[in-house]
Each structure stands twice: as structure tokens, then as C-alpha cells.
Image (tube, each protein chain N blue to C red):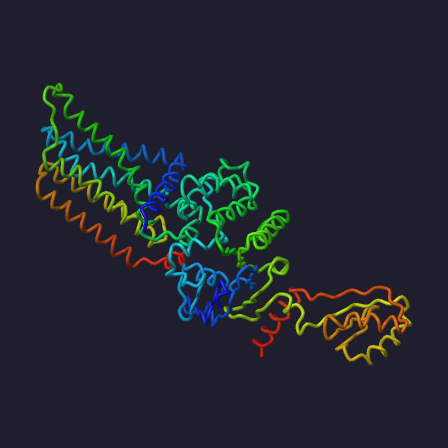
Length: 317
Length: 230
């Protein structure tokens, strides 16, 4: 329990007579990159606002760093950094002025402040723009500035709301790498709200998929993409005449759970990872002319679409 | 609530308001003109220089300040709507009271300056025709009003900022403070020759009213209300 930096238990929130969140339960262990995935209107932002102490849940309990975010002490609140979807930087002020305000709010001593601001601006590659008004910045630069702002007080957890939405590919890659660096090098727990499947798949180690205020699925990314620890291999042969022999062989193997021949290749599902080597040896011993073997990875997109479709199917029924 | 938080918010607001250079200059000069020209158009009708000064300090000093604070609040509203920074500020450890007092302090500092300039002009206007042989100063009531008015002004600004926060910084929320300005100005024009204890009591009552309303308003204002209105 102490290892969890966020604990959400039975949280419900009704806004305007509509249940925005229904019985939400999950925990976020320390040091992870945690993703909340869901379409617009799934309740991600409301949940983030609850975690930041901006709104209170109708029922249930939320703990961030072991405290209720609404009644949190100032010291504990200093352990939280965040970047909301609207950046939160004032375009009329310079990069330095924007960060300086937050540095003061988080209680950084005057003598340390300047050095820390310069260090953070350097970290996000904005040292050359220190005196420039933020209004002249690109979206990617504003996002980087917001990250510098959120990290100024060395938080233990960083909440990010759609960190790469509306960014160009270059900006997206930069922010993703920065997030991974913050997690791996500085041990900051990262909580990401996103509807970008690719982004979540690339950087999150644990996810929650939400829809209509409900949790549809949650777990470690690796487990979700490989249910029951199964492995799927795509086997291509040198000669298509060898397929019947392969089919006969596969029918006799107990560690093969399922297989199909499709588009000139055999798709073989194995009971676990360790069966791969046994399969390779068996194929070689039986002189199957193998051209290529590729491990098939389930994508988050497949998983997400299957969940959403299943939900829609239930709704229709 | 920490004093440093209030100072940080006030400093930021001052930077933001003065950064809207054109709007700031126009509004600042406009309210200064309003304070000097309109107020003096009324006070100049009073022949006695001391009553003239007292009248200015009792009503027009305050109305000039209110006009300035109203004008500067429009910049705050403009900035609030354009920048959408409020949610980020609310999610920091800043309390609502610190945000309110910081914003109000910035407006107070900026709106007090033209009023003081107007006071100097009124003082010179009353004394120069007399050849500076014996300087005319406000009466004791006038002095008290002079020192109370900044406190009353700060209370009015707090109340204004609070109602801007309640009404999600809509332009319509500026109407309320403009009504207060008109009320004070009209009262000044009506009672210009009878400055005394009644006016002083009115000031004190106004002061109590404004701070009580601010306190009650702040007690019931929740971050959730502001965030959900965004």
C-alpha cells in the first residue's frame, strides 16, 4: 500500500445530473509511467481535477502521496507537478517571468530561484528564449515551457493532460523522450491522460482504459498486450508445399494453443514464451523449410478497439 | 495563506496588466482624466478652498480610485479570458484568499496613483489663487477620510475581484463596480457642501460592509465552482 503514490477507491462524480465517474478504483505504484486512456468525455479530465484537488468526488476516496488532495498540506502539495491541457502559461509574459511566478508560489528561495529557472529552461532547450514573450512561442515550445514550469519545484509525481496533443511530430518525439527520461533518470512517477493510443503504448508501463466514466480495463501494458502470457509467431516457409506437413506437425504439439494458415504464412499461438525454442527445434528436426519467423505483437489499438466494440455490442444488446 | 503568496500573485498581476500596454495606457489616462476633470468640475463650484478639498477627499478621491480600479479590472478580465491560466493557478498550493488579495493588491497599487496625483492637483488648485501665503489643508474629517479611503478602496476592489471570480470574469461582472462608482460620484455631487461626521460614519459603515461581504463571499467560494465554470 505504501508503495502506491496514487490510490483511487470507489470514486463517483455526478455533474449536471450525469455520472461522469462511476466507481473508479486503481492504484499507481511509485516510479511508473501510468496512462489513462479514453475517448473525449470518458471522465479523464474530471479524474485529473479530483487528483489535483480542484474538485471533490461525491463518494469514494482519493489519496495522492498518501494525502487527500483537497486537504493536503503545503509541503505535500509541493510534491506534485502538473501540466494541464491549456498549458497554463501567460503569453503576455516572458518565459522567465512565467516560471518565476510558480517558483515563488512553490516557495523556492530567492537566491536559488534564478539558478533553478535557468537549469529548467536549459533542460527543455529554451535557454535562448528566456526573455522572449511566450506569445511568440510555437505549441511545442509552450508545452516544453509548461513542463519546465511543472518541474521547477522537483515534484515526485507529474500529472500530464494530453501532453502531445496538437504538436508536430518533432515536438511529440521530444516530449515523449523527455517524459521517459524524467521517469528513468529522476524517478518521477508520471500520470498521463491521453487519447493517443500510440503515445500511451510507447511510454506507459501501466494503463487504465476508460469509457463513459467507467474503467473498462486496467493492468500492466505487457500483460494487457499479451493476455495469459501467450506468444504468437508468424512463420513463413520457403516452399508452400510444406504447409500440410507443418499443419500435421502443429496438430501434435501440446504447447501450440491455436494456429491458422493465412496469406502464405502460419500464425502460431504458443502457450508461453519458453515454448518458442522448443518449436524452433521441432521445426528443424522435422525439416520444415523455414524462410522467416516473426513474433507478432498485439497492439494497444487492437486491444482498445476490441474493448470499445465489445462495449458497443453490449449497449446494442 | 502566506504573505509571500499574495506578493507573488500581485507581482504577476502587475506585470500582466502593464503588459497590455495600449489598453493600460488608454484606461489609465482615461480614468485619470475622469478623476481630474469631472471631479474638479464639481469641486470648483465650491468657493471655500477647505470645503473644496474636503469634498474631493470625501467623494471624488474615492470615485476616481473606483473608476481606475474598474478600468484596470477590464484588463484582468481580458487576460483571464485569453490566457486560460486560472485552472493552473488554482491547482498550485495557492489558497483562494491569496489569489484574491494578490489580484486586489495589484489593482489597488495601480489605481491609487492617479487618485494621489489628483489630490495634489486639488491641493495646488486651492492654494495657488491664495498666493501660498497661508496654506489651506483639509479639515480633520478630511484628513481621516484621506487615510480611510485607501482601506475602503482595497475592500471595494476585493469585493469586485471576488464577484469577478464568482461570475467567471465575464464582462457583465464589471457592471456592478461601475454602479458603485456612479453611486459614490452622485452622492459627492449631491452632498458637496456638507462634509462632516455623517460622511465619516458612512465611510466606516461602508468599510464594514465591504469587508464583511468579502469575507462571506470568500467563505462560500470554492475552487470547484471556478474550475467547473471554465
